Image 1 (cartoon, rainbow, N blue to C red):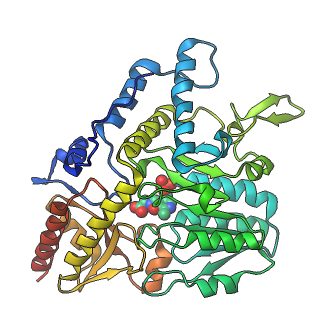
Image 2 (image 1 turned 135 degrees about the vertical axis):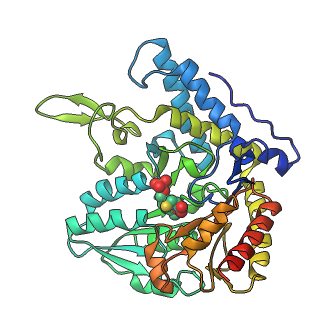
Image 3 (image 1 turned 30 degrees about the vertical axis):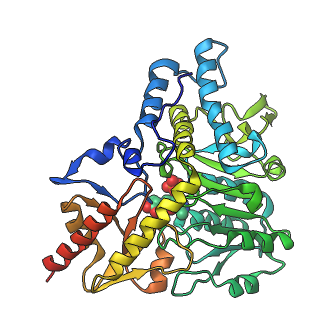
Length: 415
Ligand code: C6P
């Protein structure tokens, strides 16, 4: 199997790291690209796209099926990622690492499998007001089917969960807590350790949506004691179409399969089918193999820099950007929690976010505009949406300065 090669020096030179992202070298609308939409999807370093390319050129076959050597090679490459993920999030065993197509798929798996088996009429599922739709709708769907109800932990205007309300909402009916680790629309880092500990005192399992946490900080599922933890490859320098559900082995073992088909079975007869062992019980059909291999290379890349260094650098850029944006007249940051990851949502006085985003795009500046798939957050602030700059470790101060200049131009444009 070809090794993943990256070129990261021992002492971190962030500009050299940035240079490893070919996509960032291009011009958009005649201007050097400033990519500040990392919350939607991060960019891919050359080592990751090279690894995916090498897989297609040298190792591709279906996995877990063939006796032939190429199939074994593909299986080895694909399964190597499982060990990397286990180590990356400090899970106990490979059986706890379920391959999915992303965070959304991971949460649907738990809602449909755990929820259908365990929820009944009158039961309650606690979610928060700052969830991404991926951590609301799957629970609503299973609630509708089983007669369970959603209860919502409110947030304050800074975008922080009101923990007193969280404790008040708990009752004997609470059967699941599902909370986002880092809000994609506000950047808030939630006190998930406290939430998990409180739920466990009441024997309630907790699912954490880690889509915006795993790419930006060291996540240790054992230290957190999370029961389920979901995240996506495409936000952590990997490809789209691949993700992870971490689950505690005992819980996963007790859950029925979510999808049926090849690979997830032990024995099939027309009378009865028995299931494969973990983790394959939850992985029906041919998976996105090259994407899985790509996630492995993404993890290698992140590990070579180090998650602590990444978190530190992104915090530095967040502080720089917050200070600069706060100096712009008529700009208001939405989401001012004490503990924040490198996401800045903001509004410009009298200018619709979509109009502002269009003018920024004309200057080669990519930000996201709208509700960021978190409509209840926008309902809280009674706004249609925001502009969102989501910063990664490969951004730099010059990107932030370009954003500031861009915003000044937007203001000029709209008078
Ligand atoms: N947020 C954003 O621009 P998928 O699409 O399954 O990879 O991830 C869904 C998801 C779940 N939870 C959180 C906190 C997320 O941020 C996302 C994806 C993107 O913010 C696209 S909407």
